Length: 241
Image 1: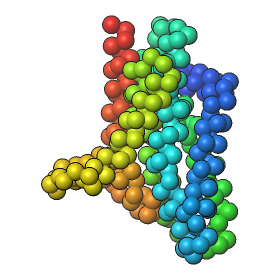
Image 2 (image 1 turned 90 degrees about the vertical axis):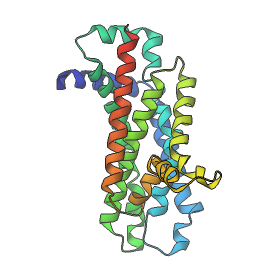
Image 3 (image 1 turned 135 degrees about the vertical axis):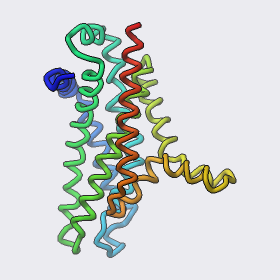
Image 4 (image 1 turned 45 degrees about the vertical axis):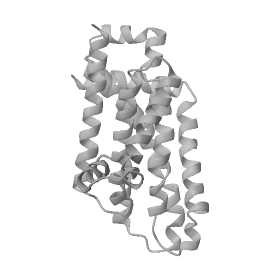
């Protein structure tokens, strides 16, 4: 895989995104609920604490709803228009196609996260915030987004319609976020409960939300991202057979 091949796919995907209103709707659908949650329901002004923990704590839930909307057309639209075969007939490896599409979605996500900086910047004057903690929270937000996008892409590549791709991605992300809650309803011994916590996207994010960079959580997110992208690559290769 060459850098040029990956860049070719990335540019193609970004052009397609810019031709639709989906990224703008997704970004608005993330920014507005996150801000409303932080100011209204979390009641930041009433807590008298210089912390953005409540703001970032909403990210895992919003990712479950928002990110599948970005990935649902990744493969389905290519199949519907017949451009997937055209894309694969070009001198591009399956890995370049998968990584290029992943990079395009992450570009939208990073722009979205950049816009969320308006909230920290707006409340900075209200207290002495820990910039190190905020940096850790954003690192966690990026890693969680990357893992969630990769999972949703792996689900999307197996679907035949955008609706099923969205609902499938949402369901899988919901399970991966909420699986650590299962011991609350089912009596499990210690080690199964610990395994469920260790694979939970939301549970792994809690350290970042507190402003702590946990190397174990970093490794988990990176491993999950790589594994899901590899599964998408395998699925793309099998579609050729």
